[in-house]
Structure formats: structure tokens, C-alpha cells
Image 1 (tube, rainbow, N blue to C red):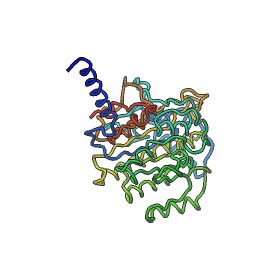
Image 2 (cartoon, rainbow, N blue to C red):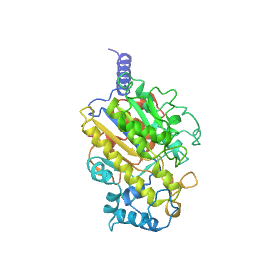
Image 3 (cartoon, rainbow, N blue to C red):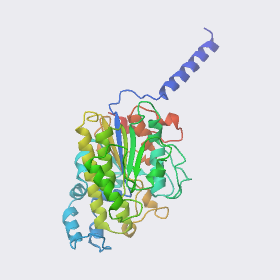
Image 4 (cartoon, one colour):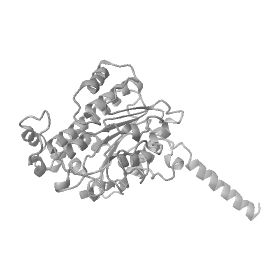
Length: 374
């Protein structure tokens, strides 16, 4: 064989190897299902430090249904001498289970950075970055309209092994646009819309009734328990392989500067996530073969600006994220780790399922390597 033939053979081998690397299958993962839960506007500061004693003592606008002793009860529930006790009281599942058996990023005190890469630091751009795998400067408003890009959820649903096994539920009505409900090809239920795509159980019927006739505190979203309850009923009925749940109360209460309510919403959302995890671990289709991803869509400001976010508040680009599953080493609370970004979640989700999203969408960010190391 002459030198030119050898060179051609080597080049051909390189191309074949590259093709194999970019193929859809990433072998040996135990994960067969992924659940993504996003807690809108939940600050890393409360996640890692617990309740802020200064903010919890300040009077805030009274909300419907607030007991007279709301602040006193909130202080009793969440204020403790140590940071570890404060954050564990606020989010016991996150710290008692995920941080023990999985990984959590974003504690700046430990040199762990998690952030958005979009320039806007508010909801739609944050969700689009997370679900598309890259920041899209066109999406510069929460009223942008249908997502111009295909989400990783839609990309997976187009594959035979995931078709009909993908679903998204969210408190915020705008998830209908974020997932492009009209064209994505899978079940999406958001906002005040009743859900009837599965047999309507007594629990789902009660949720649908509240959506139709209950009190509307916010025009574009109900309380988080409705999206959570609907997702739980769907898991039992359809057993999806890829599920999204968007929870919105932390952001709504924060914008009202209702810090006690904000803390309670973090605590409730943590309990909803715990119930989802307990449910799937009780089902043979999910037990020991499901990865759970939890994160917000953006952060918030510090001090007096804790309630706000956006371009005018650079700190609101700062986020956190947590992972637990059979392919994720139990490294716990990360320190001195490589920075992770919301744009990496799409490829990470796909890689956990043995799929190479970045090969199909080259502008998406690479998977988070630490999450894929057993």
C-alpha cells in the first residue's frame, strides 16, 4: 500500500470514528427516563443559605388568606442558627435526598457557578435557553409568541423510541408558546387550561374544576399544586419517559415582595418534587432508571433588589441546578467545580437518555460531563 492509500485509509477511519461519536446512541447509561422540574425565579441564595433573617422580619404586603401570624410562623419554621439547618428546613428533599445521592451546583461561597447565558435574565429567554440548548437573542419578551426553535423535548418526541412518551406541564400559560403546543406533537398543559387528554380521575376532575371556577390570583397561572397534581396523574396514567414540570409561585410571590409567601412556595415546591420522586421510585417503569433535574429559569437580585430580575440586575443571571439519578455520581454539594450553564441542560438530558443532541443541534452547549460520570 503506497503512502497516498494509507493516508486515504486513515482519513476514512477518522470520518467513520467521528460519525460513530456523533451517532444518536451513547451506550451504557442506566437512565431510561428524565424528569425536569423548573422553579421559576428561585434564588440560589435561599437554596444554599436558607431564609434571610433580615428579609423575613420586614413587613410585606398582605396577601389573600394570610394568617395574622404569618411572619411569626415563617420565622419559627425557617430561621435556625446554622446555615445548614436553615436550608434543610426550607427545602428538606433537596438537601436530604438530592444533595446526598446526587449533585447540586451554584453555591458561590464554595466557588461553584451556575448561570444563564442569555442577556435578559427573565423567564421566557431562560426557559428557551434551557430547553433549546442555547441563548436566542430573538426571544426578548415574555410575550414573544411561539418558540421559533425546536425544544429538546420535541426533538426526542420525533424519535420512534420516545414518540408519545414526552409531556410538559406548567403553571405559567406561556409554556404553551415555549413548547409550541400547536406543533410540538406531544401533550402540553399550562395555565388555567383543564386537562382531559387522559381518563379523568377524581383528583384530575377536582383540579379541572378549580381551574374553571376557582379564584384567579394571577391571570396567567394558577397555584403550583394544580400543575403538579396534573403531572402526577399523567405519570400514573401514561408513564412518560420525558416529563417537564414548570412551577411558578416563587417568582410570583417574589415580585410582590411577599418574602414569607416566597419561602413557603419554595418549601411547597420542594415537597411536590419529593412526591414525584417517591412516586416514580415506587413504579417498576421508573425505579432506579430515572434521572431528576431541578433548576430555575433565572436568578434574582441581592439585598433590597432580592425581588427583581432582568438586564438591569446582573446578579439575576446567577442560578443553581441539581441532579439525581443512576448515572450521576453522588458528589453532593459541588465546590470549585467547572461553571455550568442553563444552555447545557438540553444536551445533558439527551445524553442521559443515550442521545446526542449536540450532533443534531451544533449550536447547543455541550453536556455537563460530571452528571454523566458514574
